[in-house]
Length: 105
Image 1 (tube, rainbow, N blue to C red):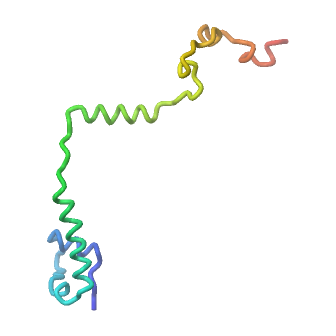
Image 2 (cartoon, helix red, strand yellow):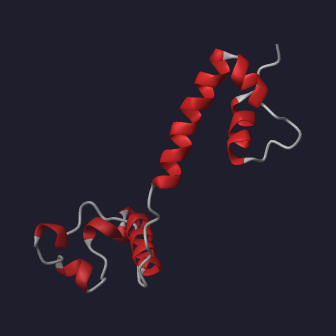
Image 3 (tube, rainbow, N blue to C red):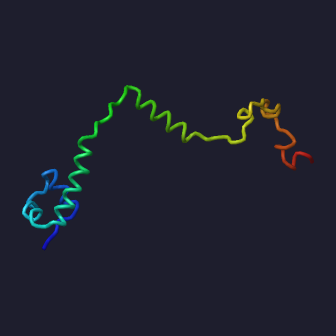
């Protein structure tokens, strides 16, 4: 006996089975009928679910979330701890910590 695949049963549910008419088989085969009934319950629940309405600013919210999640983060920043930046960072002048060994010669 030739049993339909899950994909063929889904196409049958939507009426897109083409030449394959699985009704006679489903009437005879208990196993395939049970599988088809489970698929029907799942597909019926998808049809019954309401489609959410989009707001006018949904696009902006999505892009804001994308930008926030991909922005580089400074885990050890002065501002994070409520401190002022050190003078050498504010003035952008090199400090002994950032000059390197060659600057002492």
